[in-house]
View 1 (tube, rainbow, N blue to C red):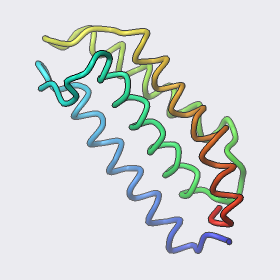
View 2 (cartoon, rainbow, N blue to C red):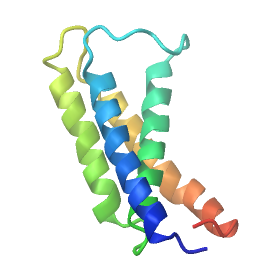
View 3 (cartoon, helix red, strand yellow):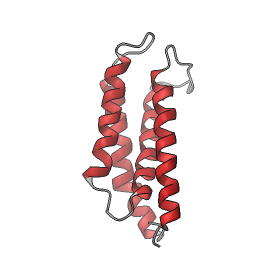
View 4 (tube, rainbow, N blue to C red):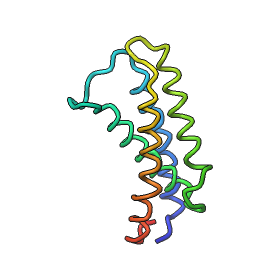
Length: 121
């Protein structure tokens, strides 16, 4: 099923809002613990970047899930981690970057084929 221009613009707007919220959440000093589990932060990173990948793909449906869509998201994740080094209560984490990349890969390798099978994308 083709994505309408209106839905595409909506996904673009949601992506912008999601990036703003993600930036705020990831740069807040002394963040609250959301998931009380070992490596819960990594699960949040994976889910966030899975969602960002979905919105980026729906926002620009003319192409497949190409590097022009996922590399800027990965660069965003790396930039956030570099900035976190200077935020009190935060630190740089290679594990977070790997979780970001895993979220992008999970979208491209698992969720996107599933959406295509269901004729949603």
